[in-house]
Image (cartoon, rainbow, N blue to C red):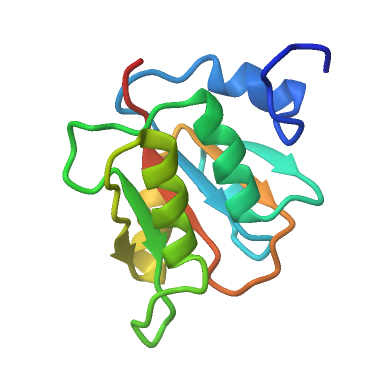
Amino acid sequence: MMLKGIPPEITPELLAEIAQLGHGDRVAVVDRNFPAYSRGASVVVLAGVDVTEALEALWVLLPIDAFVEEPVEVMTQDSGEPSVIHDSVGQLATLAERRSVQPGRVDRHGFYEGASECQLIVKTSDSRPYACAMFSVGVV
């Protein structure tokens, strides 16, 4: 890709998909084990990228919604404990938005339901268990 300012993790296919998103649309960024294709949304695969790298690249281009209580959510472990990416996702979101963004927690089955309502699912190569997050797109 020859565009300036586009993170290298953003493929042409992903760029085309995110260009179609609008305020309030939802995006799920999921690990390699997530059943992405059964959710009904467009799926873009980012090989060799983990969830936090994908979110960091996406948040260079997409704002996080400021009009909803929990615009970012992270899947919890089945035990209810936060996933290994929970803190990093909060730090990345806060840095990207220049405001405090604390991710909400969603259990695995709730995340599956939420992902079914997403307009886009970005499937990564992340092998960490429960490394899945969703966010609402904001306005520029």
